Each structure stands twice: as C-alpha cells, then as structure tokens.
Image 1 (cartoon, rainbow, N blue to C red):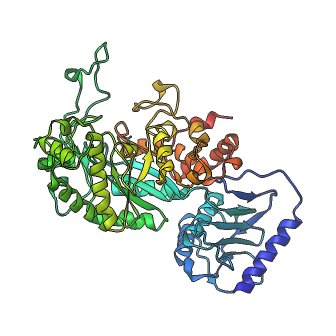
Image 2 (cartoon, protein in one colour):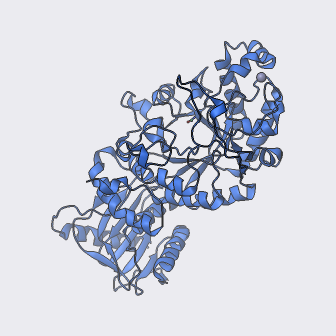
Image 3 (tube, rainbow, N blue to C red):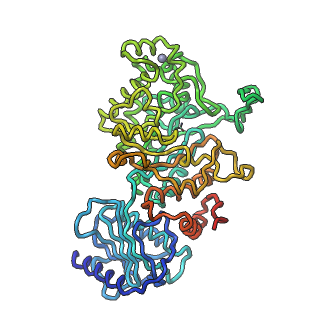
Length: 547
Ligand code: ACM
Ligand code: ZN
C-alpha cells in the first residue's frame, strides 16, 4: 500500500514541476489554505466512471461522507477499490507514510488524473473534504470539473470557536445542527453553547426538573430597547412587553444527539452553565439558592439582574455540583464553561451568609468571594478530570488555579491571564461580537444591541497580542465569535449576523497572518457565496459591493 502512496506522490511532484509559471488562480476556498498552488487552468473531470481508491480503513467515516455528498448532490454512486487503477481518473484517500502528530493537517492534490486526499487523522481528512466540497461545481452534470490545485494545510490555532446564545432566544435542535454545519464548513472545531441565563434555562437536568418546567419559560419579552428619560435614567414605566409566553429547552436526548452530530464533524461542544450571576431562571425555579429566598420570575428583559447564587450557602454548591455532574455526563469535552461574567455584588454585601463566608474564609471583599465561588466549583470540575473556562471577570479577586479565561472585555483580561500562565481564548467585543452592527447605516439594519464590527475588522483581527513574550503567546489557544441573541429572534437572523463574519474569523483562526489579504478574501467570498445561496443561507451581503 505504501508503495502506491509513494507512486502517487512521485506522480504529483513530476506533475507540479512540469507546470509553467502562471499567475495564481483564485479559487473559492475559505479559509485560505496555508500552502496552496493553483497556477494553471487544468481540471480533473469527475464522472460516473471515476473510482474511489481507499488506502486506509481509518477514514471509513470520511469515505461515507464523500459518498453521501456525491450521491445527494450529483446522484453518483462511485465504486470503492483498494488498488490503484491503471487507467487514471480516481479519487484516492491515503495516510502519510510516517506520523506527523498533526491530526488536523491535510493534503488535497488535484491533477488531471486524480484527486488525492491525504491526512494523518480523521479531522484532517474531514478538512480535506471540506476544501474539496468548496471546489465542486454547484450544479449536477455528467462531467464535474474540479480545478487542479496542490494544497498542504495546517491550522494556525487549536481553539477555533463560535458561540451561540440559545437563552435570550431559543433555537431548535435542528437549527443548532445547521449552525454546527456552518462551523464545519469553515473548519471551526469548537462550539460554545450558551445554555443558561436569566431569561431561560435550556438544558434538562433530571435531578432538578423545575429548571426546565419553570426556568425554561418567561411570561413575556421586552419589545425593542429599554426606555430612558432625557437624562439617560431608566424609565421602566415606558418599557413595552409583548405579553407572549416564550420558552424552550433541550432534553438530554436532544443534547446527546447534537453532541454526537458535532463530534462527527470534529467539533467539540463547550457547554456554558452560568454562575454566580446570570442565574435568575435557575433561581425562579429554586429560589432557596439565592441570598434573599425570592420569589423570582424568569427575566423578561435584557441586562444584569441583581439576584445571583448565594455564595454563603453550602447547599448552593451541592445544587451546582449536581447540575455539573449531569452536564459532564452529556458533554465529553475537556472544558466546561461556568460563566463568571457580570456578577453584581449588592446581594452578597447584604447577605449574612455571604458575609459570614467572607469572614470564615478570611476573604478581603466580594471580589474575593467570587474567586472563592469559582475556585470551589473548579475543584469539583477538576476532580472529574475536566477543566473550567470562564469570562474574564474570573480574574477579579484572583484566578482559580487551573482556569482558562475567555477575554471579552477587550484583550487585557486575556493578556493578564497568559502572563499568569493560564490558557486564554480571545473574544474581545471588538471585533468578535457578531451581535453588533455590521454596517454603518443602522437604518438599513435589523435592530441590534449596538457596536460596529464590520467584516473587514473581523478579518483584520489577530488573536495573539504583540505585547506577550514568545512563551506567554503559547497560552493563547485561539479565538471565538459570539452570537448573543437579545435582538436576534429567529434562526434566519442568526445567519444574517453570523455570516459572513464567521467566514472571516475562520481565516483569522486557520490561515497564517502573512498569507491573509482582505481583498483576496472578498474575491473568494464572492465566489464562495454561491454555495451559501445554494444552501439558502440568509447571509449578510454587504461585501458584494466591495471591490
Ligand atoms: C458577556 O458578554 N457578558 C460575556
Ligand atoms: Zn448570600
């Protein structure tokens, strides 16, 4: 078998050498591969006579993916063989001769006789297929022309993430799977699933059924923005609500299905269970874990609530540990996101139990109480062999010993964490919040939370801060785009806000910075958008007018 691989490689090098030097051909590949030659006009012609040569049984799932794509898109059933055909015209799936230890790397080499897909690991072969799929014609025909190209590819970052808030608005299991499809298309490998917040608890927890029977529902939702008077003071009497009950949640069966679906696309799901703040939906169901005892209602508007988990009550931690135990059974990934953002401290200041905890633990203040909270939960999560990740507020009062930090209030939190030798995911509001406007003319845009993160600013982002030393830079795992959904009310709007900014971010995360070029990206995106059209994706089209 190795002999065949060698022959194939020799064939390729001979072919590559024989080509005249011509200008680089632009192909609709997003993200741009790191090593890529397409300097000629030749094509491979895929027909019903093409064979698939399978050199490694490891890649059976990817073979099945290829076969199913060829069947559904082109009605092709190609024979699979184990020996190289003598007459050319085949797709060959191989593994490198020696191990590289890089399971996400891949080669995709297309010449007039063959399409070679080569990778060490399944993820790499899956990415080879994603690139191949971007090159396939959109329409069915007897002769499918694939441009000749030589690609050797390898991702820049190990955390290539997208987030989706399913609390402020709920998206069905099938919509979440569609979102996962978009991530896979652009070679993301992490989906941060925001499952609990003040406005809705979205994950079934068997031990605490009220979390979903009560916490997944809110009685109504704010219409538009909160009202303010001339002096900028909130004017609750002028706030308008829709009077319509809203809710939804995922059963554990749904969750297992989505986790397995994502895994089949080499995407790890990081579930987020918010604490100590952003927990009002949980407290509406179980008010005994708050400082005041409630009663509460699942929130109907946006912003920060005053009520949070009581950090002075040991039973709060039992409750949270029970929840996390079920969460860890459902999500097999290394990281569990425990929130940590925007935790108001007023209730803790007024709570005898919280104040007793501060005294007993010799803590200086409520910031240190927050650190106590996160560290205690981290200890539990670590005892199960997992790691916690939290928003950058978890730095305040001292970082839990093993926690990773998601830097959202700019990059300072991420920089501070990396200097403390903690892992970091960069997701600064500017430019990684895709709930912000993408065009200056807000009158032509659907209502958004605010901000301005156009496509070019996302594309220009570099997640690794220059101020870090070479050693500190190793703690930057990657970056993530966040889609918060206060003003994103249905899945078509998710698509509009996420795409094509997600495509731009994919190139930030995959492609080495010296290879990136915004104009070239826009040119490729215009070509690639035909794929999005074919898939009926409601992507934002501002780039179509860009030169
Ligand atoms: C956040 O946007 N509150 C993490
Ligand atoms: Zn308390």
